[in-house]
Image (cartoon, rainbow, N blue to C red):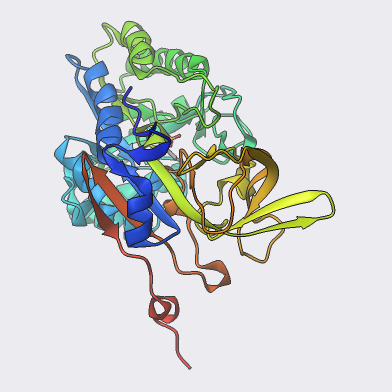
Length: 415
Ligand SMILES: *Cc1c(COP(=O)(O)O)cnc(C)c1O
């Protein structure tokens, strides 16, 4: 696995570029991504499935920057989308609508209609009412929509409750115990073709065992559906593989995981799809920020930085851990502190009670493993402009999204 960020003589680099050079030119906070790391991760999926019919559909919601989508489209990726907005991005980035799968529990009539007109590959449907709507809209357009039902295989992904989706009590998918009846009723509807089954049990799975359990249940389901005359051709196993947010975390090996999947699906005559998001982009990105102040309240040390929950909400939302590294190693030891942003919320922290380098005002730090669900979840809360995004390719770097301006903050508003 290519490691995009590393120290050279005490200075932190992304590929061949010194991060502090980027920070000095582009200002902070800024997101920095390694092109090579993203392509490396994508290829590990694509090559792990070499020789069997497959498509890797990158989950756009993890990071939807046009340049990243364009890079992945050129590498042959399909795309997993969850909104009409994401479909718009895929098209603008040069992606092929024929390689798009549309997931999500709440697709609107307008979103379905435009996806049908653009000729996307398929819909992952999450309810009987949604199937009926797609059937009627496709019929009206004289089209046949390719459909997979998103099955809830009732597997415990053993991840954070907010990113676990594969248990009966979750809003996602159709209960595996009821799905055969849904397929049989849907088989009578016009305008749709029941081509696939799909699942996605959760995110940040460091142990692939639940994914393999889900795959086993899905293959048994394919057998039962085929026995009832429903000609399933495609199996979509979703995304979900995790990344090592803690320095010591295990790294799930995509290759080993796919080898096990290949053994399971061997002989089943299925077109295989995956929808990885986090595992493609997370490790490729860092959020670079400058220290504004240090202060002490009682015994508590605070490092106040210019990045906050509006750039990276994962610590506040999921109690997520991100390693924090100084851009320049120093001799001044470490300090145990809360790393906090300027936003007026007690939940606005990037790390709590963390031993970090003893950084001083003006010093630069990098919040690591921030390429997924970082910028994509950024907000303008507290009327903060969203940061710029930078892509590093070898020894060069360029801005792939400009920092917002103050006028961007009020665009569309009226007095
Ligand atoms: C979020 C999501 C993914 C991507 O999940 P990761 O954990 O980022 O790989 C894939 N498929 C669906 C349906 C999703 O909602």
